[in-house]
Amino acid sequence: MFCDVCRKFKATGTYVTGCTNFKLDSIKSHSISASHTRNFARFEAMRAPPGHTVAEKSLLSMNKQVVSKLVILFKTAHGLAKRSRPYTDFSWMCDLDEAKGLVIGDTYRNDKRCKEFIEAIANTERINTSSLIENTKFLSIISDGATDSSHREAEICFVKSSHLGVVSTKFIGIANIAKADANGISQALTRLLCNIAGDTWKEKVIGMGTDGASVMLGRKGGVIRKIQDQLERPYIVGVHCSAHRLELAYKDACKEIILYKKVDNLMMNLYYFYRNSSLNRSNLIVSFEVLGKKPLMPTRVSGTRWVPHTMRAISNIANEYSAIVTHLQQIQNPHDPASRKDSAAKAKNFLMMLTSKNALYFIYFLWDITICLSRLSLVFQDRKTTVGVIHSELSAARDILQSYKERFVDLSEVTWAQVNSALVDKCPNILALIDLVLSMPASSFEAERGFSLMKIIKTDWRSRLKDSTLSDLMMVKLESPEIGKFSPNAAINLWFNKNRRPFFNDKKMGNSAVEIDTEDDVMTEETGVKFPISSAKINEDDDDYLYDSGAEDDFYSDEDETLENRRNHEVNAYHNLLESISDVM
Image (cartoon, rainbow, N blue to C red; front, side):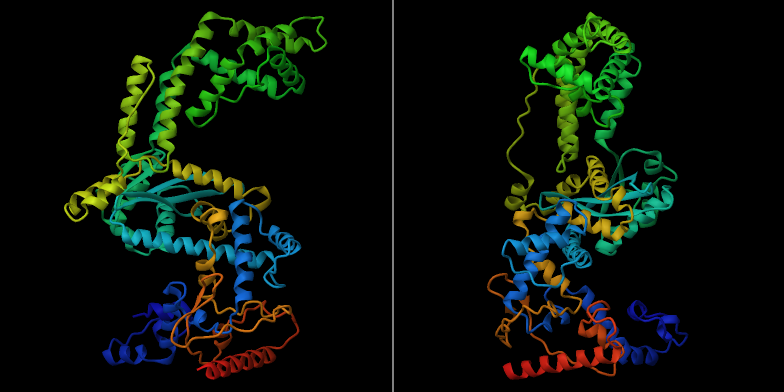
């Protein structure tokens, strides 16, 4: 028999290593013991929302200047994470703020504190996501895998839900896995979701969106099957990403067409012909200027992931056709200074294909097709796309491909959120069913977008980022407000959960403490950050009192200071704090 609360904070003890005494008196004796009471208080502090922990209530001497400094520092850290900059930029950004006349103090101006600030901001967004999962009735998991810059397999996880008609997709986390098999992926997804929402998500999963790989959709041993068996929910629906299915359908339709292969090779060779030669690029730009057109370089078509990329490459060829033909004809002139034998031979083959009537007609035919399909693909990639929207868009695209007429779809301006607000009391069960349908993932493109962001953040220069750090940066990037709309108050309150003494070493801070009302919470006028009232009791003989006092291992500037001096320093500081409380009360 074990005590889960004590096992979180202690390494030894009867109920930590396992108790064989199953008598009720033994359990009652443990529940009222000092050790269990202290551990339970720490456990409750971890679960308490920002603004309600003992650590926050002990900061009674907090003044407005401290809060204003923290607001600037948190906003700087938030902007750094939003722009995918390394933690080391935080120091010079603080120097820049100080050069602008902002008062930010002398402490917390290093990369380690920046990491703590970003972690607090990310944890704030995790709390919001956890609250959303707790309030919604249905949710779907969106997942995909890729390799990062350190060549390690990574699995990313999102959840999609609909609550009162409002569809939302939230980032859960990203984790490296040793092997990208069904067991490894399912365990990673379960661990990520449990870290955010505990076990509440297990009773609400109704679908799972993936890219269609066999390891995900396998009927006997796929990830979806593993999660169905693990949660004992065989009705979880596996959804093959609509955007990926569109790509496969497009490639399957074109792979047997010989002319398509020739045109595809032509566009690829033209891309490398101008990409690998600065001389050819310069001469092509001159051709555009002579014809009075805006320069457009050929783009890569083969190997791209989505139809819009193919459409852009085809449209560039069609729009720059006359300039390319002019330049290729010029290269074949032996008297031209830019003419070379290898370039002239390539230009002759390109020109033969471009001037072919069949090839030219097929290019414009592909242009019409890809314009329609790229619009459809962009709808599939929309974050708020639902299964119903995809069905209507597919019907419209089918009609366009059949008739080659301009598509016009008039969708109703009434949203499901408006329907819920009007009819929530009359037909709650039907609206709950609508939420179930809206929670179904239309695609797993959100995971692809997450991996694009992962590769922006975790570059070759930052390949040693841990999973937790990478998740923090991605959480801030994906879920937090934009820089201009970001308010760090909630993150500051959450950061204060670890008993902090802000700007303790700041020699410039000289403002008087805020006047404290013993009946109400303290709120600064400028920032709105609350600091509730409570008494703080210090046990000098307790080995854990350094933790309770907010002292950190690297908090002191003097590395040679003994532990006894540090303890005396902390005890004196708290005695002064208690005396100031008694004076106010």
